[in-house]
Length: 252
Image (cartoon, rainbow, N blue to C red; front, side, top):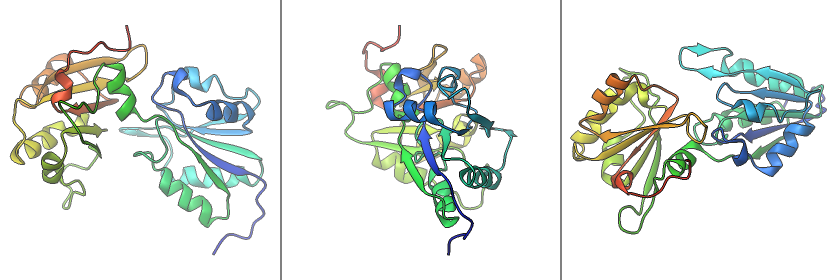
């Protein structure tokens, strides 16, 4: 049953990509320049925020570990309210809205409230960051399968949703989003499932941005390297033999 309150506008769930403004889609850029309201996340880069219509209402709804400025229900309510008074409401999300971006949840809630929704995909960091680091996720001689998985699960959760055993056994390249803080819990499960401790791993921080940095090690050594260097989020992890390929990175 939908809400009977009249709706003026439409909400666009727009993927901003991983940070490099050149990776924003043309459709996405056009929407930002036409928007009446933009509700944006913390990881959206400044150059992309500068594409927003200067006359638009810009609302920061960013979420970062330990610093959630708005709860998910509050964000959805803002989108509903703004769509009832403005024609073009953009929900600007880092990466792609449907890849660990809660876009599916927001779409369902908006539709339940009778709000029209359109999704504009973005380039997800799990693809872009390794590419900018010179790491191909697939390669005929090294990897014919890729798994994208979230590492953002509560420590001590009684029934984890991620089956690390199946992932370790079933994929040659593993991309872990939001997993830097939980690597100490994830890596032992991957090794127990059969991955060698010498399996290469690359942690890529601020992927595609000028400040991008990569930390390379093995499953046995990476935790010590993280502690030694102070490497921190936001970052994704790439696990598999493709990490060792000596290919030129796309960023100088």
